[in-house]
Length: 193
Ligand SMILES: Nc1nc2c(ncn2[C@@H]2O[C@H](COP(=O)(O)OP(=O)(O)O)[C@@H](OP(=O)(O)OP(=O)(O)O)[C@H]2O)c(=O)[nH]1
Image (cartoon, rainbow, N blue to C red):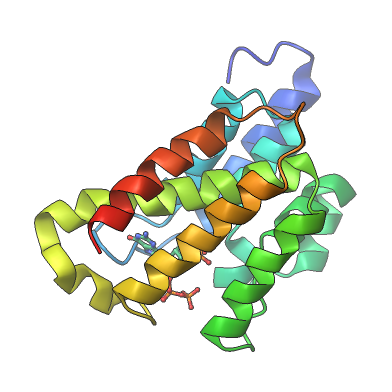
């Protein structure tokens, strides 16, 4: 984080988001390993940082799952981190009262009108999740898919749809490094199926 030398506020926002997410996810584990859930939030924030995204987007990377997966509310995120971070988190938060198909279709369809930063957050999130699937498939094989609400075909369909929409709606002047990385992982994921 040292490379953010634009003032103490930048360090402060990102550090505050990191601490907040660490505490919110405390005790939660990822499904395919014993890793703390926070590791995923940290990976997403790191991908965004390496891609040169704004401090608000990096902060949202840390916070992207706290409303979906912990008792923290959107209002709390707005109060603590402000409107920009809050809108980015909201764009990446599913409505858990809906079924799997409705939630995933909503995310797929949201890409059409998403801002560049919203798309970057979705891409970093799905890149880390898809990389996790590839990594753990080596160890667990197809048994891995039973950890999720839908099996291999639907999971691969979901990532494929996300990739297609991200490609379709990328504006010509938007950086493509994260998307290219995601598409590489997606190609490997499809070979598993
Ligand atoms: N690949 C992978 N995913 C894991 C792991 N542990 C938890 N997950 C989460 O599982 C979610 C997908 O699980 P599903 O059973 O298909 O669906 P659901 O939780 O959304 O209902 C992903 O959420 P998502 O909504 O697609 O993304 P996110 O925004 O929650 O990160 C991902 O974050 C893991 O070890 N590996």
